[in-house]
Length: 338
Image (cartoon, rainbow, N blue to C red; front, top):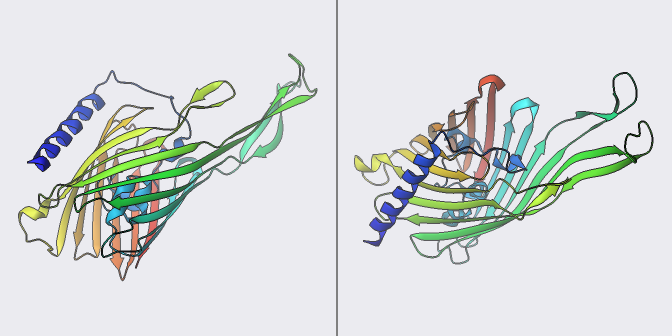
């Protein structure tokens, strides 16, 4: 009976977040910084529009729900992703997970994650007394990255927990201000726009025991308030609850040669309205996967598509997301397990 009550509670929470997310009056904008942390680079996750909170993602679970890493059945899992983001910005991620006891899971799973952003060069100017009112200075090269260490463990055959600590840094270059009010082309004061907060992620995963139905919950990007100049903000805090299940469980015996995985997540963001995310992943003979996903309350990128191929422990994934006025976003991931 406990598992049914948990299922009812989780379904109610998802429906509650759905109704809030679809409300036109629920507007929350520009309340957080370090938004690069919210960008998905993993191609499998992107093909499902990000609906992976209750899915087995190997070491990539560190970017979504660390608890999902606890059920890793191999000793080693490595993934590397490339995301060609809008405005020629490149996002790169790397993750590694080590399970010393794949058969019993006695020691849990230890993982590391790295996220890096390549913004390229940005033109820079400074106030000047010439006819233009400014003059060019050396371009700046913004930097952003996050390095994390995570751990997950199955407390029982049904319930697992996980967490991650991340060191996050963002450098937006230098600001140059006049040393005195209204002073033009004189001495300047240099202000370094560089912050390095700590971020914390937590997650749980519950296997209901009813066919392949799984529930997952996570809290990501929890941090203290930080500030540039005089404006304080937090990292892009997000609460997620999700459920997933192989729909073919109803028409084929367990361990069949194909699967149709349905995954639904409901998210509560600090910086924008709630979202409901739905993903479908059809896999044939554990080799070829075709994916699609849809997310509500996104202006430009609400639909995603993906494909994946798995053989001999190597998995290659690709995701394509139409992005409205920004054209498209493409992601690629290589994963190796042994």
